[in-house]
Amino acid sequence: MDQLEAMPGFLIRRLWQISVALFLEETAMMDMTPPQFGLLSLIAAHPGQDQTWLGSRAALDRTTVTGVLDRLEARGLIRREVAPHNRRARLTFPTPEGADFMARSEEPLARISERLLSPLDAGERHVFLGLLRRLVDANNDQSRAPVKTI
Amino acid sequence: MDQLEAMPGFLIRRLWQISVALFLEETAMMDMTPPQFGLLSLIAAHPGQDQTWLGSRAALDRTTVTGVLDRLEARGLIRREVAPHNRRARLTFPTPEGADFMARSEEPLARISERLLSPLDAGERHVFLGLLRRLVDANNDQSRAPVKTI
DNA sequence: TACTAATATTCAGCATACTGAAAATAAGCA
DNA sequence: TGCTTATTTTCAGTATGCTGAATATTAGTA
Image: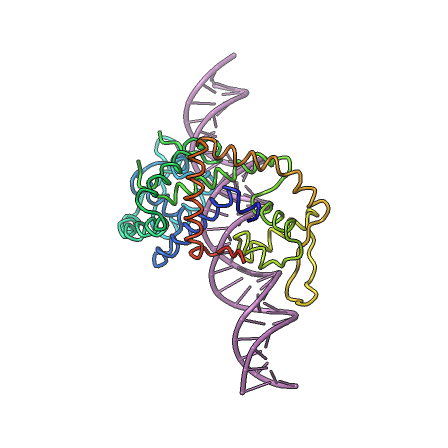
């Protein structure tokens, strides 16, 4: 047992690596990444929001949002237009292809969580997710891209 | 509550972001990153291993190991030399500066874990880390950079 | 109104984290 | 020995995830 293995941050990084790998495997035929899915999901549920709003919901900084949206736009899954009353901002909308994409993603996404948590029984999953959520919420402001729910 | 917030992978990514931010904050005066620390820690504890071994312990793929070691070497914290009996491999060793660096890092590192887990009491921390470790170990082979302890 | 501050996005740059391919070396085998 | 395969590292390329600076626009204020 090394010092590294004993650090919570190392275990958290590994579980993140695993969850990304499972995501890429389950959505391989759709050629998607977790942040791309996150933003597309938000845009489909909340059309017409600007990029700052998206970043504060997806926990992505402004620059990463720009890059991910560029790729979603290039693939024709979203479109952007300048906000009518604020020409600084660009509002995002799902295209029909983007909406269809979201509809087709439900089953693969459910499998990701199922596989990730499969080592735990139902009670353990509930405990783990509850503690995980408490750690994330309580430390939200420590992150460089804190989430704003308002 | 959006679909995104309900996905375990999203919460895991956020906790990873938080742990990285805490790491960078606590080690700001040392100008270090988590993977740089991970590899330096392994090299200090196990001098003379090759890069493949390091990657399989630190959960980093071969290319990432190369890049991180390049930066550690440029800073004078490690040195690399061709393996005497296997000229494909390059063995890594800590420099005196690297060993000194590791010694000075103990206190900041302890503060990172403390701050990260501070929202939980002692019993909850134990439960969370236990479940986290089970998830990581059981899903180890799902990762693109699985850990080998042997 | 003119000046200043704030906001939204983008650009340049750096550090992970990965894939596939290439290069060098070593090992196994007919 | 000669050929094939495996191993170790590096290179090229892509996608996050971040900082600081620049640009454009808007809001606030003297």
